[in-house]
Length: 281
Image 1 (tube, rainbow, N blue to C red):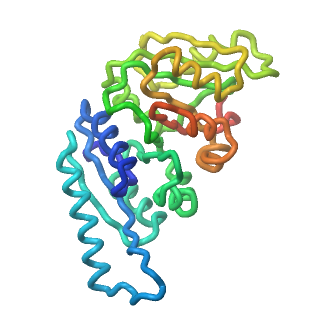
Image 2 (image 1 turned 90 degrees about the vertical axis):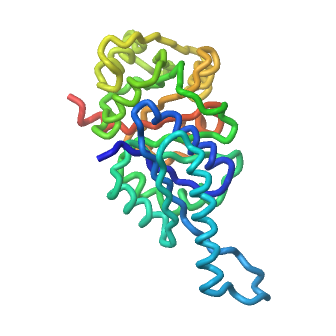
Image 3 (image 1 turned 60 degrees about the horizontal axis):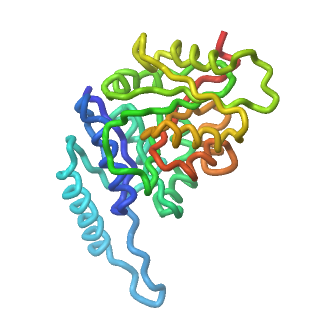
């Protein structure tokens, strides 16, 4: 089966930018793009006639055509699907069909309808898939293969799930330098936690053996601010965050450190699900 990314998209510029970025990231491995759009009938004035079945069908067909035209300009083969069901069912079916390496979503400065649907319909299925999730902010730089990647870790033992480890060939295909970032917690008791973070990343199976890793430690800033400062100081063009089971998507857009980083990150963020700490021996 061909390698693929599943991209949740629509006709917005934010979604188009995320799609172009995903196409560039997957190009070294000839990754196929599965573009999934949830069709929403046009909202009409309640005092006017409701939309007819023929008009709804024509509108859906026009949406499909516009997405297909946009897909033809991508530097990767792409398949477009416009679903009329719920996003939960559409994502579940698409994941089952294509077994994507990761899911991709564009993030706008203001929540758009696609993000609204994600919050209210897709969280259960996205959480259930445990697949890596790439979030591309609206203000991210133009798409290019990452050359400097920051991997932010905490003090807990790191064990990525199998789906996260499946990204290893993809990361190996990028000409990138890696920096491991550890922001010291106020009550952290571990000795040399930065060196432990380096060792955890080396042992995670995410990067090829012998990949050079630099260590960036922050002692004075809060976690989210420390991670973003590391992104700026290293001129990173991609940020990797470890998503613990207790917070993965459940609090993604709310009060978690991940949420704070996502709201302020100037570069795309790749969330990698990890298994629970109590499962690590």
